[in-house]
Image 1 (cartoon, rainbow, N blue to C red):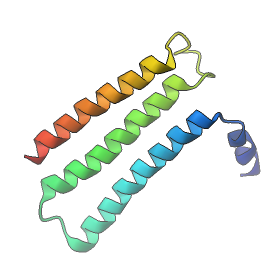
Image 2: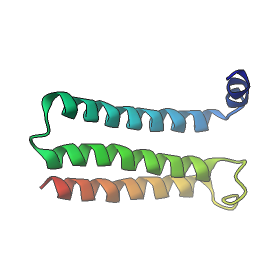
Image 3: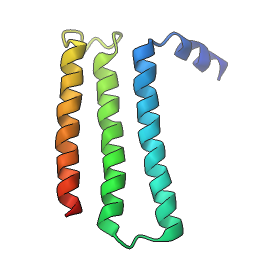
Image 4: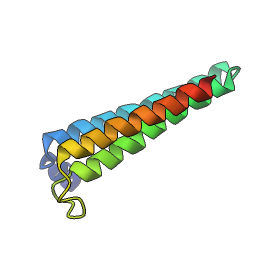
Length: 103
């Protein structure tokens, strides 16, 4: 654990912010699942919309982190602004689909 902490300390701040965003999105999905387990899932499409929105946003955040990471040689020609624009556009499409699923 100590070596993991040392390695993560060297991670750039922008990647740490993206990591926090992803952790928050997954934690929100977990809270929704626990709430559904306790209270019930009467409007099931609303529950699915909320959880899929959180998980989809987390996946898009991980994709953004992969594209913005300077150590990743696969996306070295992709500017960070383009990666962020892709992230925003995909989030808009995701949430339009989620809103449509809500009814």
